[in-house]
Image: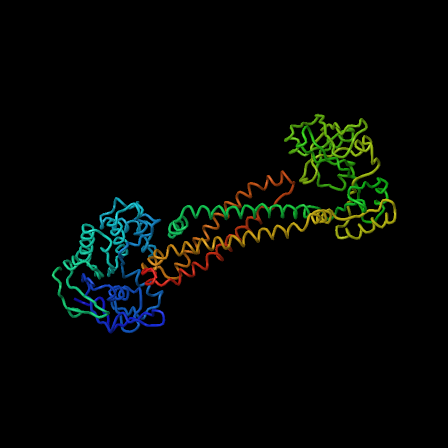
Length: 235
Length: 378
């Protein structure tokens, strides 16, 4: 299958006070279109940093990040923002919904950046909410929803603009077992039925059951299975 | 427009804090509107005075009467077209709160000086035939329920009559037309002068109609020269100069008002700025999410500035609206006509400036927010 994400010789350093800390060391990774890929590893191993680079939230210190054929490491902040709006959906551990907006208004946010008409936006929001099973909660504010429901709204927000790539940072980290499994099932459904490429930082071993392969990081380097090699047992 | 609900929901994110801030801005703009109304009212008093009319009064004091004999001499000055004596006859009706602003004049001479005052010919005729006749403004007549033919008692604040009392019965014989902004009752000079027990044969002021407003200062100097070194020296000025002189006696009102308004807005800048800064700090993760899903730095800046702008304009609109409601009350209580339009425009201008100055620093900070740091809570 064609590669959607290509990370080549990527180094990421952060400044901590007077010192520079290298978080990722000359990392190479290929992710095929349509993969469901858990990024695993201990805390501080660089999983979220790698996810942020792939999602265009951060830029590497050196190396290349190519997503969908575009060198996103060369983009300006404005170009990256517009690229994210078109190509990437984000799901976070703590949902990060706007507390003052209804579920529908939260889902609509990415569509405000498009040229869709009000009625088209409404139709897309309704479809996204239906896909995550929350059509009857459209008017509810986040504080009127359970954790699992809030994460479903976040997933609906992530997919409403029909991105090719879903970037999830510990999406089940704040949920109980039952809700966590529902969210994982939903992400798998989006992967299988909608063809979304899902890259997910997780500590949840259950995620491996849905994955075609697992990528593990430790101290800023890939460990275990070589990058690109299918090891999963799921899809 | 599609971002309006996002802007509006951001404004009311912390309802109690937003309401308190709203009240403080409303209050500031209400005070601004009222004080500017007062200031513009004073300006209007001066502006409404025609430069074609001069006012002559005693050089010793504005309350010192001047002899009627001056009239004939003043009429000899080139450029003086007409002269009317005027005696302040203000008083009260039934209760001390029912004020009647009145003057005693020679009606023909008065109408020669003030041709813009419209009086029906039959009312002029009735004034000539009725010694204690009075012409009243329609608003005054309506507020006290007066009709033509009524005889009403006016209790003078200045003049006792020959009976030793201060009550002067006057008969309403007609109404004053035109856009009179001054006294709303005219009575015959002869009635007051013959009836009063002191200052007979004198006037409080003379009003002079000139042939050319540009010559007003020159004509005024010639009039005053006529009576120089006499027992009744005069000072002749335009009513505008007179009004300004009177207002300056209680200080430079415009300066005081501007200083108060300036202090209020200066304090408001900091309070609104602090509220906006606090709001942006609290919303750092939310703003980071907006950036994550594709809002550019400029879009975040514009969103936050729009929030401040909408909030300030909304609050200023309420404050200025309340002031607008109060303008007629100001006029009723102190007789000034405020210029509402320019004050509203200036107020909205201040609201925009307030929003931009107080909202820009936190909005710029939000614009520079690094998504990764903000999401990580750094």
